[in-house]
Image 1 (tube, rainbow, N blue to C red):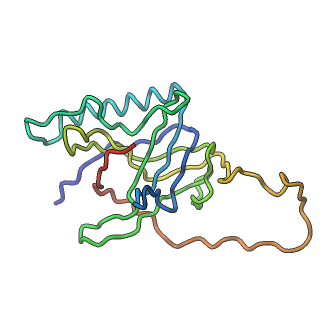
Image 2 (cartoon, one colour; image 1 turned 90 degrees about the horizontal axis):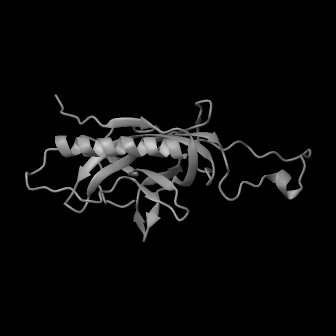
Image 3 (cartoon, one colour; image 1 turned 30 degrees about the vertical axis):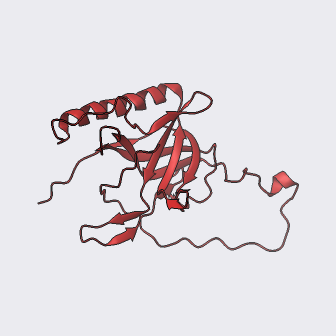
Length: 206
């Protein structure tokens, strides 16, 4: 029998998408940072999610099996930050690879759905899209400096799409529908989202 940890599952209210990396991993200085998406909520929903994260942190302080000398940071990582406009932005992340119990490494894919629950590609989600994020809260403790709550990403629902790259369609450029060439629908990759939760490496970044 396995002693698998149970994490608190969450689904955010509708919010504004920022910097979606759901098909290709986010990169920093040539290093794979995994999949990620940021979401900005209204004030009421922001306060509610922060309260949920704070509650999870207090629970972790009581329940995590740590040495008695372990101390938590006065400013733990909590998966959100204040942007230049003073708004709180939450960042959900997931590693691009997952290791099975047998030690095999598999590519992870993030499930993305439209407003009706149909599976879609996550390539074209631009800033300003209206989304909901499904994920879980994972407490972590690396050291007295690096600890807190990581917001883990499992799936995204797109309620209102603003296409990446500005969202300008043919009509915006003055084109109308004409008889002639019609591009074929893009083929979808046959990759199944990996649902099993495994502990991931924690770097402590936002």
